[in-house]
Each structure stands twice: as C-alpha cells, then as structure tokens.
Length: 322
Ligand code: BTN
Image (cartoon, protein in one colour):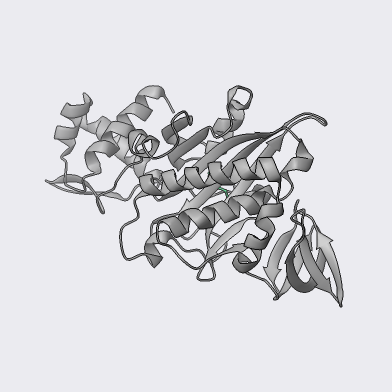
C-alpha cells in the first residue's frame, strides 16, 4: 500500500470514527480528494473489515462510533522510555518487529489497527479486521539463548490474564502452551517467533492477538471464539487495554528474564483450562491421550499416560479435549 493511500485511509477513518454521516463531497474536500477516490478508499477499508456503510443522500457512516488506537493515550500509562509504535494497516505486527529486530530494545512494542497478513500458529492466518481486536507484538532478547525461553509462552499467557483482571475481566483460562480462553471459547492467541544462533542471545517477537469486538459475521475462524465485548457490559477501551497489557508484559518478562519459569509454575495451575482433564496431544501424525497434570519446572506439559507421568515439550504439539 502506498504511503499516500495509507495516510488518506487513516484520515478517513479518523473522520468516520464519530459514527456520524459524512458525505463523500465533504470528505473529499477535507482530504483533498475526489468523491470517486473517497469511494475507492471506503471500499478498501470495507475489505479490511471496517464496518462502514453508505446511504444515498447522506454519505458514509460507521455502524457504531469507534475509539481509535492512540499513541499518546497509551504512552502516558506505560513506563517512560518504552518504545511504542501505533500503526494503522500493516501486513503483520510480528513481521514488522522481525524486520527491525537487530535495532530494537527490550519492550519495543508495535500495535496496529488491522493486519492484512496476520499470522497464527501452525502456519494459520490470524483474522485481523480493522479496529476489532488488539494486534500487538513486543520484542525481547534473552541472553541465555533458546534454553532461556522455555516456558515463555506460559508466562505471556499469565501476563495476559493479569491484564484482563486489571480491566475487570474474570474467569480467563489458559490452554497449554499458549491459548487464552474465556467461557470455553478462544479469546486470544500468542505467536512467539524466535531467532538466534547457538550460544547467542535469543531474540523473540512475542505476538498477541486478542479479540475485542469482532464483527458478528466473522465466520472464517476455524474454532469457537469469543471477544471481550461479548462478556463485558461496558465498552472496551482498547487504549487502556493496550497499556495494561504492555505493563503486565514488561513486568512478567523482566521477572522471567531474571528468575526463569520457577516463580510462575504455581500461577499456571489455577489457570489451566484442561487441568486434571483427559486430553489428546497431537504431534505430527502421532496422537497421545492422557490426563493433563499441569506443567513441570521447565514448562513441559505433564501427562498421565496409563498411570505414568510423562513430560511433553512445546514445539508443534497441539492439545485437544479428548
Ligand atoms: C494463534 O494462532 O493462536 C496465535 C495468533 C497470534 C496473532 C498475533 S496478532 C499480532 C501478531 N502479529 C501476527 O501476525 N500474529 C500475532
């Protein structure tokens, strides 16, 4: 997308965010564009998942008013010096951080309103409609290399739960190794992409997708999902959510870097969605069934297989209810 188009679309959304009608003519004058150009940009925004419609004689309107992500609103509530980038529409916040990975400091965070190529685990796409969720990626480098990041995704899940508790959302559960559930449905996912040579620091991009208010007609998600607006009686302030999430990530990652997983092991069990329940582990073509017995000190899932407790490490294991 050209820089000009991105700027025009950002300005257009800012005008529309009040939820009022704006005629194509007025928008065109305000943005220095023709009505036809406005109409084209609106069409693209619709394709990005923005819920905008038009009425002849009145113009364009969002289905409901929308508070856009704001750098200043988030930055005022996170530690001074935290590098924060708030972007409009990009391919993927993880990809954005990855492309700059050698020049970043721990805690460098990127947020976007929409992703055109949001990435999920196991090579899946992450549905990322405009303004509907939190798309966040944070950079962190672990001096101890790959060994030092064992259990990282569990710590990130614990941090997400704490951020949600901070904004009044209770009852969150975590599915090993990194899914966030609410009322039995997926609320958020974590994708950690790590880089580093043997014996060198492990540079991580910690990506979080957290559903806030997905369009009701969202039907291209391959599992039952929920969003915060479905469980909260007050509107979710995404700027507040972003700042509490960043604060909890900074706090938890700093502790994890210093003390490893040990301080978090006891916090995991009460949050474990499948604790003491039968589960099926999928590892490539292999399937193992057993009773989930929580995690060990290195974050491996403990499975009771026929009376013998065995640890299973992250990677490409997928957990399903048995
Ligand atoms: C999962 O499959 O459960 C993980 C989803 C992770 C999605 C987030 S959205 C922000 C960041 N950027 C991406 O492209 N993916 C992650």
